[in-house]
Image (cartoon, rainbow, N blue to C red; front, side, top):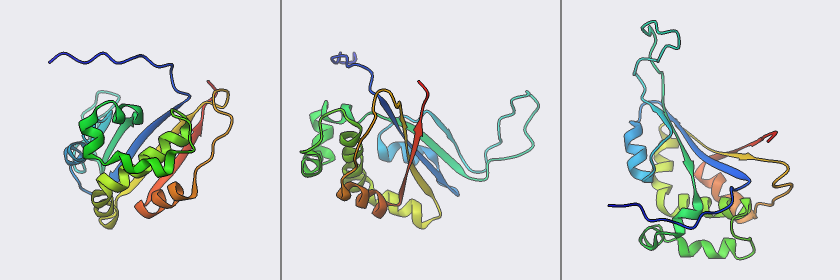
Length: 168
C-alpha cells in the first residue's frame, strides 16, 4: 500500500523520544504496545556489540527501547485518534498553540495515560524506568510552560522528563 503524502511542515524546534529500560522485558512487546518502530533496542541477556570487531564477552544486563515520537501524526490518522481517545486531550491543550512544545508534551501525557497507563505501571512495578527525552534548541524556543495537570500525569505515570538544550 503506498504511503499517504502529508503536508510538509517546517522542522519543529524540539524532538521527543521515549526511552524505556527494564530488567528483562522483550523490546518487541513494547513496540507492539506503543505501535511505534524503535530507533534502538536490545534485550537483557543479548551479547553486547563490540565496536572493535572482537566478539563480545559481555551481555546486556537490562532491556532497552528508544523511539522518536511525533505527536502531530497522532491526529492525522482518525482511527488512531479514536483508538487512543485523543479527544480527551482538548481540556489540557485548549490554551496551547498547536506544534509548540507545551502542546506536544500535553498530548504525550494524555496519550500515555489513556492508552498505555497499564503497561507503564507494569514496567515500573517490575523495576523499569521510563523517560521522555526532550531535545530543544534555545534559539527556536526560548520559553515554554507545562500545565500542572500535565506535570501531574507524567508524575503519576512515573515518567521522568529529561531536557537537553542543544547548541544548534
